[in-house]
Length: 536
Image (cartoon, rainbow, N blue to C red; front, side, top):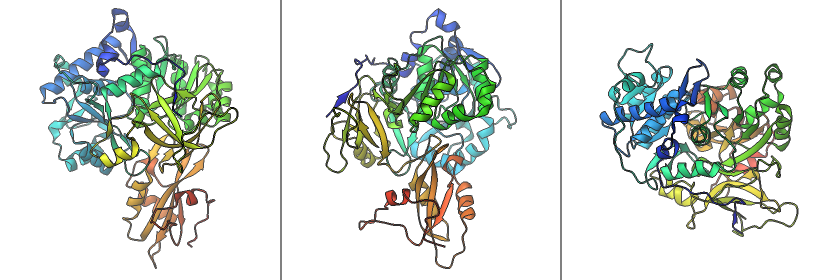
């Protein structure tokens, strides 16, 4: 049974992201504060932001950037990130965002796969970036610094210098329905990270679909603690807040004391969090030392939120608590609990406007219907709407596995329906591990582990953890006669991946359980208690 949002559809204009966010700036809007650097306190009005975006677009065009060119953006949250991201889009380029914690090898892989022709970063991240850009074949003239370049040798052009040229934005004509705006990377339901092709139409739809369900306005102030390089931060927090003409206070990393200080100092009203931050806000004694009375709404996403935790957080802060569901491939949100509190925060609620969804029994293909009472049987959640990605970059096979012929996208999440069609996510079909809201693709870690000379087989699964959500847990088969400790395995992986991808638990085993067809029986491993490895 195909279900729809209980809300009427919204109009999705045929415009670019820039036209949606900045095309209607009035005089009053231009004077509003758009961005605050949470560390320095420096502010940027909407008028200043729009002007800097135009100037950066002009500088890029003058240096040969053309519509369709891919630009890699590797920076922590800061006002300059917004200038760079929207400046590239204004010039007709496509932004591929990188995790600021990536190693040179991880950066290189994404630069090559995305076909990036420019690299934008900040001074502290430059060493890793230079190693990667050299390996990917980019020259020094294709690398730009978003800060003033202090501490560097002056080789690389900087954002302040580019803006000082005062160039107007180029005139570009693109089709929002087909032109790629963003190319974030996601593992989808399985396998290695893939470039997710999000058009201007996808991101415009995502902003418009959120407006009826997220009551955000120009009086709201939002601490931008979740990274802009992640689709949640990019689409919901950055683009959504700019569209509402609210104020964003950026912080480069999560530090609880700094987060609480920003909320208190700037009287923040809207919090977007992931479950680990929700845990800290609910349980950490430091929270009692700050005035958080300005907070009126908290939205949790990126990983499942426990109902009891959500209720406890709402009670502690005296605010409304919502839980959303999404994927990078959905730009990213498809479902959200209603703000009126009519559905438990343990549910992901109903679909956003313009979204259709269904639950399909993974064994029979039968579509489930809402029950008269209680919950339905379990099925895979599938979603269709204008926010569904255009596909995976240069990967038609993965695209065909994910987007069905009738346009529904397979989320890989197992869910149940309530009597009103509300959705409760209960498990995952997909192999992806979620560590503190970040994606950890098991296939990537398994491939890395197999490069160790003392390892002949390995499998990585998630292990439940109250704070992190899931911990990457490796089952390792040692080469006969080899001496290898768990600490050595952990260190081997840690040296080669971003911190969130580290293997946190190592179990040695004699064999990795597989089906007759050779498929790893991950479900069997996920259910094993700690210390259940069969090897010595």
